[in-house]
Length: 319
Image (cartoon, rainbow, N blue to C red):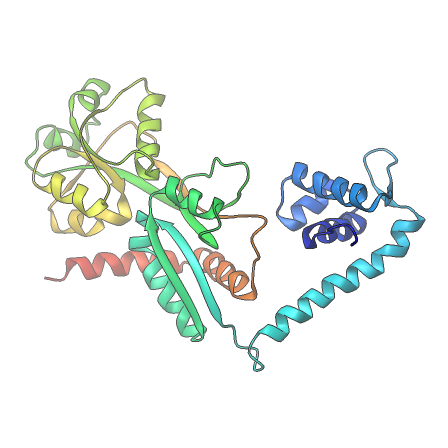
């Protein structure tokens, strides 16, 4: 039995041959440079040959590599034909996609986006799972999810992460709560006030909580956490009841702010963040996966996400 050459190794071989450097090939394949270099080294070691000459930083195919390149390209094309043959003869995208999303994205953006996507591709099934950002990364790492949507940045070096869209957090309190009136009058809360307030926060591992705590640490402050809850709606209800203040995505409290059930407090904290897409580089990215990722990217670029945010507010304002 011959050496166990992988599909990824062939992709790396062809990409390096086309682009001339490991870094350019890594960018093309959405891999880290170290993973790309390792895949190429493993391929040469398993075959017991050298495929490239290495003058300086560029890699140039040697005679054997030049001879094998067309065969590698044919194998990759054969895989593409295999995938196409597995699709519906009409070319309709079908199959299922497991999506793990953090609470804010999964509650306030993803349901409407998923609805629009399945209108475009009726044979596609999207299976959504709401988690906190840490759990989403674990789902993707364990290959329990095809793609993840998280709040903030992914810090796991194994996973591929791509910025998706902007979000902002806001500190909120009930209208009659102490400090609320002074703050909304235009006077930002000072550090002592931020530390003395009782805070109702999401649970540890939440992307929302992580951004807030990082902003507080940036000013040398430590919040006095009165309660930690694993659901954004539960946090909001506790704040509406006057149990403390919280820091949540503006998406999640837009309706309460519009109805006057909560007020936004002015603070000196930097509370902007990005939502990110994450996936495992070794997970198969099907045509359905590719279409969904393009759909999400286009939704951010075209302003669809902004429109959905406004629709969410309008829906929550209805009696």
